[in-house]
Structure formats: C-alpha cells, structure tokens
Image 1 (cartoon, helix red, strand yellow):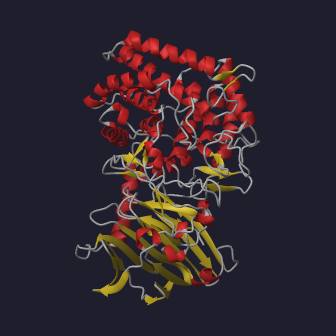
Image 2: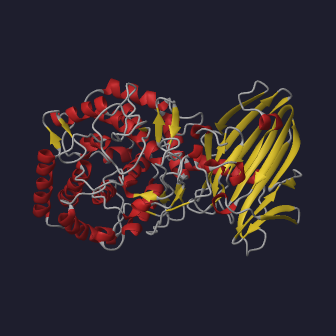
Image 3: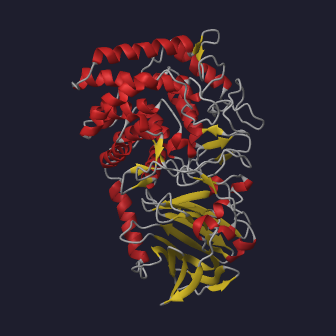
Length: 615
C-alpha cells in the first residue's frame, strides 16, 4: 500500500526522477525518461506492481510510527541527495538515495550507512516493466542480478545476498557503526552489453558537488530562502536536460480526489507555465536554465500558428495519445490510471498570450530569441485575430462544452498588448496601430461581457455567475491596475466564494458532492466528483492580496501555505483542507513557481534580473 502523497521525496538525474517513501520504498521510477514506462509502479497499485524497499526489518511488519522504529528525513544540504535516518532499539542507520548525473546509463544509488550500534535491515526488490505489468526474467551475470524483458534490462550491483522467491528478491542484512553498504541499480536497453560499473561513493561526491556548483548564481538570502531554494532545486529536477523542457510533475494519475476520476498524466510540458517559469529562473540568476527552457519552447511551437498546442512532450513531441493502464488499481483505488494526455488536442486561447508574454519577457531580460520566433509573432497574431472571439476549454482544460472563458480573453489581450510594447519599447517592426485597436477591442468586450456589476466581480465565462481562480492573475497582467475597483471586487469575490477560511483556493466550483470549494455557482466541467484546493491558486491569492494593498494578509496566507509543504519542502498540485493531506501529481512545478514569486515580492528582494522584469 503506497503512503500518503506527502510521504514521498524526490530524487532525479535531470532526465527522469524517482519517488521514495518515508517507509524506505522506491515506489515510482520511469526509465530512461520522465515519460517512459515505469519499472517501479507501486505508487499506482501495490508492491506487486514494482518497488525497491530498504528499511529496518522491524518496519516491514509494523509502521514507521512504531515506538521500536523511528524515521527522520532530510535532503543533504541544498541538494537532491536524500537521507532517511532510521533509529531502532539496537542502533541508528541512514539510507542515502540519489541518482547521479548520467555519464551513460541511468542509475539509482542507495547507500546504507551505520551510525551507532547495529541495525537489522531488509531489502525487497520487485522489478516490473511497462507500468507494473511485465515481470522480467531475473538471473545473475558476473555477480550482478539482472532483469530482462523485451527491450529493457536492469542490473543490480550490491554486496547484499538476495534470494529470489514469489517474483521478488529479498535479503536480511545488518549494518554496524561506520559501515557503508552500497547498492546500484542501472537501466540499459536489453540488446546492449552490461552497463559500465558505477562507483557509488565517487558518484555521491560528484552529485553533491554538482548541486553546490549549480546554486552558485543564487544570491537571495531573505526570510524564505529555504523554501525558495527547495523550489528551485525541484524545478531543476523536473527539467529534461537534453532539451530544456520542464515537466509539470514526474508522475501520472495521482488523484485530485481519492477514489475519483480526475487523474491525469503530468509528465509533459505546458505552455501556460512558460512565462511564470522563465521569470522565476531569471529572477533567481539561472540564466542558462532560462535560455534552455525558452529554447525548448521555441522549437516546440515552430510551425503553423493554428497547430500550436497547449502542451508538448519533453522533446517537443506533439502526439500525446491518452490511454488507460487497466491493470493498475490506481492510487487509493483512483481509476482510471491515464498514460498520455488527451487535453493536448484542446483549443485554449490563452496560449498565444503565454507565448507573447514569454517573448516579451525574453526581450526585457536581455536574452536574444531565435529569429523564427520573432517571425512567428506576426503569423500568430494574425491567427489570434481570427479566433479570439471563439469559445475554448479554458486554462483548466475542462472536458465539458467550450465557453467564452474570461481568463482566456484576458490572455488574448495580453498577446496584442505585448506586441504593442515590443514595438514601443524595443523597436520591433509591426502594425502597431492595428494591434492597439484589436487590443482595445478585446479589453472593451471583456469588461462588458465578463464582468458582473451586481456582484462587482469578473466571472469565469461570459454570462456565467461562476468564478474562476485564474481571475486572480488579472492585476499581474496589466489588464487593469491593482487598485481598480473591479480588480479589488474580483479578489474579494474569489476569497469569499472559492477559498476556505485559511485561504486555500479552489480553481472553480465543481458543483459536485465531495468538492472542497466553499461556495459559488456550479461550473460543470464534464467530469464527476470534486477536487482539493489548488495550491498554485492559493499562492496567486497571496500575490493578488499583496498587489491590492493587503500585504499583511498576503504574508499571513503565504506563511500558512508554506506550512503545507512536506518534511522535505515539497508540494503537490492540491491540498485537501478537511483530510489535511496533499493531492494530485507530485511534486508540482506549477505550485513551486508562484511560491518563488511571492517569496521574492514579500521579501522586497529583487536581483538585477528581477528589476528588469518589472512590467
């Protein structure tokens, strides 16, 4: 049985990532890429769908809350090296988990270190390829335990003597004070010879040195440094280094409501994240990462403007066909388990605005965009002028009928506004008078058709009484100034109708039993069931409160949100305020990005890049 979502920690090698639970079980790992089939998938089923657990023998029969076994976790400094410390009645030991940066085949390294007395441990290895559906043929080759099935092979090097039984390999062993026992698991295409050996201790040294060197450009030392650093390391860990693409999360189908159907594959790159992620990286001094992310974006969208998608694969792949892994029971029986994401084919009119905002941000920060992206600008705006009056699925990828979503229309305004700015501020060529006219026309329509004067708030879509947390982004776009009564009224309405007393914000009211939103009219999205409070929206509320002059309220909310992080500083997509647990795919880039922004703003801190990014 997998643990709670917040019971997991992340390790990775900048091409994929693994989740390791507080119980010492590695329950999720896709190899060789983020979007590859998982070879450990217990997270979405049980141990028979694949896991690799190392823990005190007593913990296998009890829980980590037993008095006889205690567990503590931390990352080793500002790195992605995880330490899980176990204390038993007889001694204390640590399991050090990490994935070294690749010099060839991908590897997971687990080192057991004895600190005092003796600790009796158990290792349980259950390899399963293709998302837990394929049991490999296990055998030994030159002292290594090898699993092969079809195109894949995994090689385990360890001094621990494992015994095979019931499609698992287990061993009981003891670590004493001062002793270090390493295990290295390496993936390799099955047609290739055995992978080169990995020196686990040298790999640990190099991995720690890499993170130390990586953080050198980072100079922020404000009140929220630890939260910002961990968020930045998480963004880096979610980066597919060969292309610069940043996945929304390394997981699929972790539910927005346990037992529900709102389970999606997030191992892809969303354009909606582009501008906010670029700002976070630039503001923190990580210019190389910002350039790599922008480079991925430029390649992904190249082509006809009408063919631009809302998301792409980590290499820029467009076909993300959605299917279900019916053999998996799902996390806490949340089915279906989805592989791929059908929302890639949706029409979302906010995307051109995200692209133009990213292009404008690139120019303001002194980066030089590729020439073809500047050329695409004119064609993109010509296409947007034709389609902006149409309904769409909106930012949240609803699977109901298209609507005239107010946030989407605001982002259409952003697209033309940033084009005008690029002419005025950077001397870029273009029909500025025409763009200005289209921009103003969109503005008038949104204010006339998307605003409810009786309630003093913008609405989710034209003619609707429902609200949408995406409306909190309006003051940050420049569509209206933060002190405009319509902005203040919208923030107050979202706070009143979509937020809990603690400021946890739902994206919109699902109108479904079990939903955690506290009010608001129903906004059918084509799905059954409810969902948790959306953490990115909760950070947006903190930012909107700050922008509208309520800085004390913003700070109090932000600091409450920081308390929702797990013991190693990670956040999922959503939070259930009733059950007090994290929900959705984990860890979530879309949550950690606004955390970084609000921390900087509340601390009054701005790097050289940050000052240049102020609109």
